[in-house]
Length: 295
Ligand code: NAD
View 1 (tube, protein in one colour):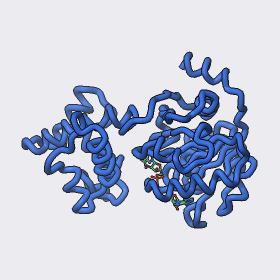
View 2 (cartoon, helix red, strand yellow):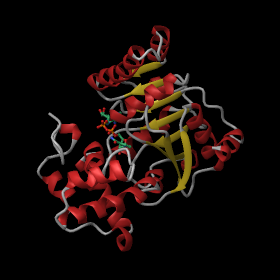
View 3 (cartoon, helix red, strand yellow):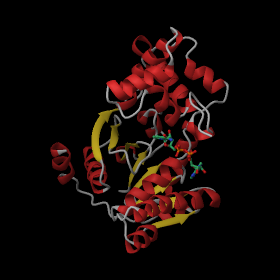
């Protein structure tokens, strides 16, 4: 954190207003986090129901806080007022930093980043919340790749402290310093990493998932594994439960990206139960059935 503060102080650009593109699970959470920490934010999506959902998610978190006596009605109103929903790019023209959080599809992201560049000032910083797509690859769609980097939040955004800031080959030091400063302003802990498959967190997490899958294939009971990891090892949740939170679709895709990028270390597990569940459309919490049933 000390290093982060030092780096943040070197930032030449002050970020006073954010924009988030995509009002889904992550975009909605990022908008809430920005607003609650006093950084006004434009939340842009391509359809109104998504914007409504993003706002209602923020309201839900604030309501919970009110019930616990941690949030006043004034704070709730102030936070919600700091989020400006919009369907138009024109709404982002004065922002200092844009966080792209649209669907995890390189073609869609490249188009969105390209379009964004046409609607903001030359010194506006652009970030992507991608979990698996190379920052260098996304940078190719931009005229000014030096003002672009990854800004990877974790789900649920309001509870997870870490933000991975991913430096692309062309990212400038100034961009990194400003994004570190903004991360701190948003009450999160930044770590700066280089662009590589899985960045840092997934590169550490996925070998653990692979080990778990191999245990299950050897006949281990996944509930028993979860209990050991939670009760004896002290992790907040075991691997099966965590996979249900992450989602089998996301986990299967991320494992493939890492297997392609670092085959000697992250080879895909043959007959991986995660892939089998994904094919059976048991995606985890998002559709109420994965390793566990949630209904
Ligand atoms: P999501 O499907 O919940 O939301 C995506 C949103 O993007 C939708 O509301 C959709 O309408 C919108 N969208 C699509 N095209 C758009 C466009 N052209 N302009 C504006 N909005 C557009 O997805 P999510 O889970 O929030 O994931 C978003 C990003 O965050 C992905 O890159 C994902 O890899 C990353 N991420 C997800 C998680 C997670 O656990 N869900 C965690 C970390 C990072």
